Length: 400
Ligand SMILES: *Cc1c(COP(=O)(O)O)cnc(C)c1O
Image (cartoon, rainbow, N blue to C red; front, side):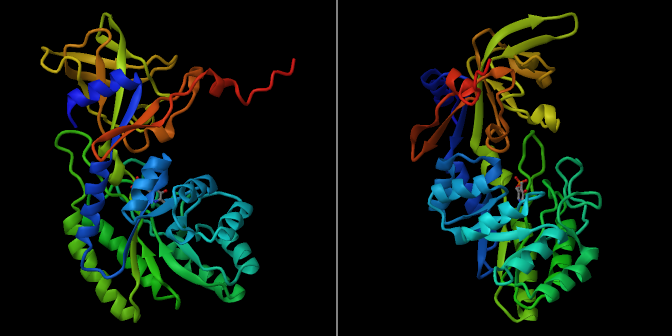
């Protein structure tokens, strides 16, 4: 997006500020659907936790996407955005039977990821169709915090427990209508991913009433210059062919599902922050901004790279900086970054700020969470007000 427009928005709405460009969301969505155009029934369920503003959800509703949710609150956001319950899948982990029952009562597709709850739910609601989340034990990507399909992961029911799943299904008479996996955040190697899909096909054959297979996500987008992204067209070509063959083997036209978060929204987002102070130390030059790990925690939590530009001085001489936050923790956004000369009050722009940025923001240090702006059909809209002191104190009762 144009630097001048971002700079104007920082002036108009003040910083720190998140900005989302819905054109990019739409073009990413189209990339996936066109890669799988040869499959008759394809459903993309956007993973709400990546960016959950209800206006963004409305954009997905216009695209005829479904939603992937992990909490009853995300389900309720989806319903508020106008989604039909049937277009929402609920894939929680470690939640109570009660919450799962409450979501099922709303008419949302349930996806269960452990045998204990499967057995309890199946006994109480044998007629409610349930999807099961399988852990295929395929290692996708390298970072254990974002890789959730490996052997020690807390997610999913192990492929080695399929006999136990079948026993639960027989004993309760419950209806299994979907098979799901979500192996982790980065598919770099299509062959590894296709290997996991073969495991799902095998498990699908164990159940008679399957309607859909949900292959989760893991689509990677570039964050750094030279990063490889998932080759969606290549994946689409191979998986579509194999999926269509499998439907014949199974004897039914199944629905192919994906639930991407990052792929759809990461590159659509920008985070704008103002430089409060330039501080020269014996070892580096720090640029301290009016933000910190309370607004964008990915660099500190996952060691992720976010490209940073100085949009106030794009033609300035390039120098090396450490970009840090104002939180009383070591909240470093980037070190040894070559950036055009930074002056106090300049506005810095962080790229790839659409996914897991605002949605992971907190009030640590009793700071306000930022405002959010959406650029939609060439117009800018404030879609979340900046917090105020009221938001910080409103649930605290002064009792002494
Ligand atoms: C988080 C999550 C996703 C989305 O992952 P991305 O890496 O953002 O694409 C999909 N499915 C489930 C079950 C998830 O928990």
